[in-house]
Image (cartoon, rainbow, N blue to C red; front, side, top):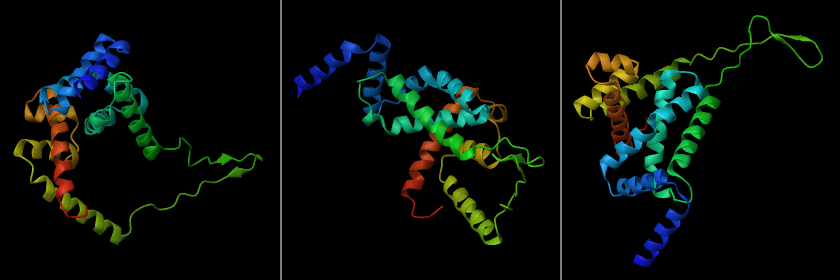
Length: 210
């Protein structure tokens, strides 16, 4: 067993940079439930991940949310990471793939509804916009889901509950939350990340269908 571990460490040292080797040490500590290691990994890459995502989605709030989601997905999959390549490469891949999925879902066609367009034969075509408003039954179901979600959020500790309510129910920006709670912006982001993780665990353990 020990020889296998030594062999693995030798394989790591042969091709990773010093920075990547330190990242790998942090990953090992995180797998041993060292919370400081999680925090340090976030601090090392949060800014660069954020600016990459900002270029992709061109919206600060979306980039912030996607940054938190990227770390959340990466931390949940830490056991899958192998030192065949740098942790940063693996993390950026997760972040970019998640952003691509987001863009696909939210993509808005930049096309004027008033002027229409011309098809390949040169014929003028009108765009027919269907009414996508939910019917009364769908609206009721959505309202019920929101109410159930609010019930789940009440199970969080007060400081996390406040963050979730301000961010997702009141739709405050990160800056507005920091100002409202008189907290540093970095603290707001880190605590929101933890709040979302706690909420995920509660949702996983509840039998309610949201």
